[in-house]
Length: 107
Image (cartoon, rainbow, N blue to C red; front, side, top):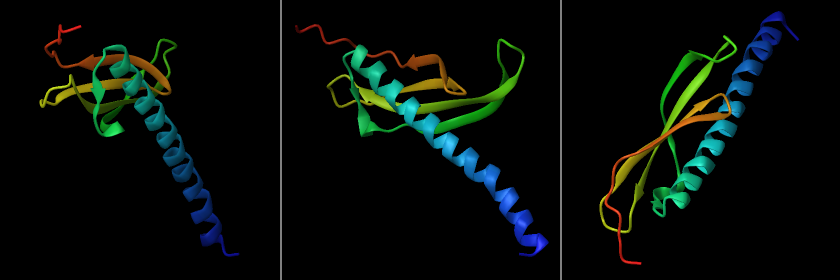
């Protein structure tokens, strides 16, 4: 093996680790979004979230970690879509937001 090949392997390993960790966090964000919709009696549309922003942020312990915002859409059984997001700090959920929507009072 040449030195160049070894260098490429060692540089690819952190990229692969970052991608795998990002997929785990995205799946956790999808689960949290579905849970949020279920708790509010609305429908989680498309059963998916998408990364809308990523940045470094300082945690309570003073260390920097990646903060990711995952956006998704929901509906309250009518034809209008509403926006929402979950904010993840590492693997921890730190904030949720849902657009205001009318509540169906027919129980």
